[in-house]
Image 1 (cartoon, one colour):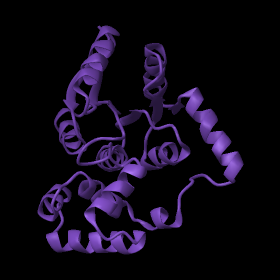
Image 2: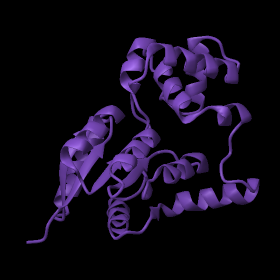
Image 3: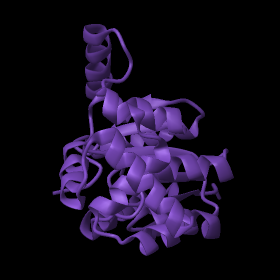
Image 4: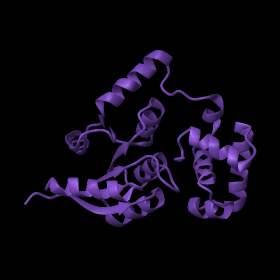
Length: 218
């Protein structure tokens, strides 16, 4: 009997997550061994289940998908990571692959395309949805650079972007410190750096900026 591929699903929309689980289970070749609705629990779930592949959204509460990919790849480099997301601009696509993603599939894709993406990635190759790859190529040719970003956004470190996301989601400094396993003083320093770099000096202004950058949903 053929061994089934062990998969963890990471998606904060319960209905979509259940639909994906049904689709993968129906294939007969895949087994969903864990599910998570946010980035923090995703890392815990992967640690507990040791899957061959993680299928995840990029826009989630507490910890964004790019950070999750980075952390999981750091701990489990052989685990395949496939992003299933609504983001189709080159900044997110290229950042995902830089973080260690093996595949990038748009949520508008058909079931057949998603299964193809997983098959390609599990075979050791990378996959990107055709419509997304075309958009990335067009953006690259038009701008002659790989990632479009303002100087202020580009000046933020990865950790600062994590803190900005959590601030925009309404978390207090102590909660942020607990989530990221850092001190409250370090969180305060990050917040001060973010405000200085962006020239935004209130939580509401930071939240609006994070929404604009699609770190969080409206």
